[in-house]
Length: 197
Ligand code: IMP
Image 1 (cartoon, protein in one colour):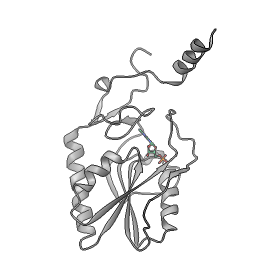
Image 2 (image 1 turned 120 degrees about the vertical axis):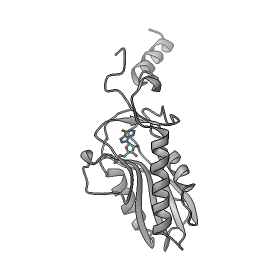
Image 3 (image 1 turned 180 degrees about the horizontal axis):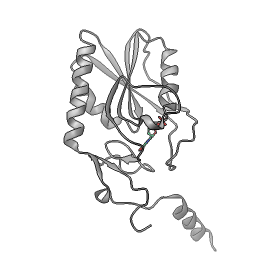
């Protein structure tokens, strides 16, 4: 076997097959998502009336939720982003969380909301919460689009939750499987056994 075919064999083993999102069941439609995001935005606007807030999005999954949420918030706000090690191509958590990108601007004395796509085992958010508290913000809250309470390994709850969901793997609205499907507009259930496998 020459070097090219060996490379292609390795690639075919590591890259999961593409499953068309149209074949996946819709968990939340764009209308349902939009309604919940607007409601959370309204709640945040009431809770922080008269204050400025910093939204810290967790890349990459929360990017779309943050962009919609920010447009539903009526109080003065700025964005920052952090990136942490993610699941990669596996659908189970390794348990280890590593900071890949830190915040760009100081948050000391500021009202901060960490914006996440999914609160799952809780490992990511409890790590990030600890890290952000070291910067001494005036307050720190968590907003998550989805919450899978059944999967929690560490005790942590979000202050703002879009939807509580059962223990199913989902994609779309920023959420990926092996980096795919982030641009899918609604939230869909990734099949346990993809069709034809
Ligand atoms: P936690 O540290 O286990 O709470 O993991 C949270 C992160 O896992 C999320 O920010 C997602 O990136 C990822 N994750 C957990 N469940 C899913 C899912 O169903 N679809 C896509 N990503 C997920």
